[in-house]
Length: 355
Image 1 (cartoon, rainbow, N blue to C red):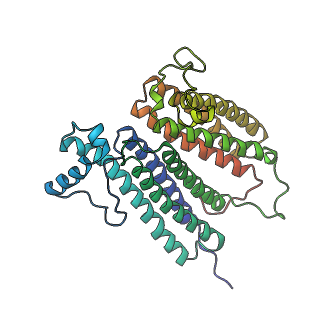
Image 2: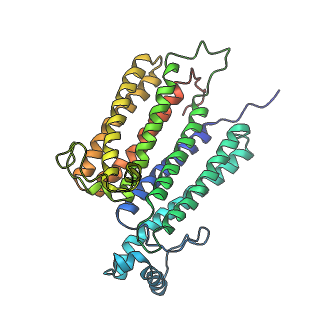
């Protein structure tokens, strides 16, 4: 008689903790960017950089390296060592949290593999998540490097890639959790695809639209476009502002011109809101189980909250609390979209061990 399969409850709790750490990383990353702290550390030592400067001489050496950077020369030349320590903290904490996520993922994952709680395709997917996390660290430094040469601004394209990969890794971890928490039934157990199955193309289309909006949110941050118009729902009295077409082409403006980027982000926001509310209403009506209705309602509520936070962000000229909340809820909204896409795939079973 074979031994019973090990419980997956510890694995699921671990995945929830990893998702929470990624969400915290997104929030800390937003604070780091908004406080202008992202270029305060001009070196990258992924294995040896876990400890901050431990003496006054060490702090002076780090500050001296920062003084040789474009950001100090062009923007922060007024800073004393005490001022520098404040911006150094957020970038250091951001990097330290990234290392913590790596350790918190790798060590339990290794234990679960040895215990055979993770095996087969699930173990492979967990390994992919770890590799994606490592790629995120490399991409973060690639982004920072773009602001250490000549102009003290990171590339908004690299910023968008960095943020998008963080969101993608969070969705990967969440999807793995859902596969373990709500595994799909076998053909013999399932009566059919479910009433929500026909919504899958629309839901995935929404995920694509929301992903575009998230990219434009990063463009807004990278080009400092959020402070251009501090009125809502209009932009200084206009629905589409003048001055958006100044480059060689409309595409160039949509990718580089802060005015066009701001206007595009706002316009896509209305499309996202309308599509999300429509999906939430239809999904709530078609849902066959309480879980599906709950996800649909959370999804609808989050998009309303996100629009309100976006309005508050621009009307306060990108005040840090509102802007950070706006970025954090963007992750939650994408996660709700992912959950809706998952439950729309078909009937799922409930494991006997609790979540």
